[in-house]
Image (cartoon, rainbow, N blue to C red; front, top):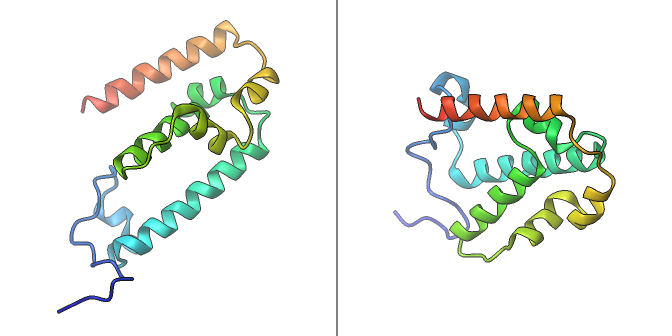
Length: 132
């Protein structure tokens, strides 16, 4: 059977995203293209939220969630490279931050020793979980 060019084949195996099959029932029934559109919409909303909440420092995101805007920039550049698109780090940061990184960075305070310690602990926990 030939499929029209504007539709993606149904997914036979969802990506390994660490979620159990029961945790992702809505995505079990949609094709890869639809899931990508939904996930892309959520990503764009996350970026808009992070741009709105520029009072939340990257060090605090790292300390509590184990990722920050710079991580998102790196992940975006890596995903672009996988798709055959060249996106350097500064261009990815501009996209994620919504402004030049230097302008955003100039408004941020220096990290406190407590913030740095929390970030180090979170990074260690992330490494530990990645080794599972």
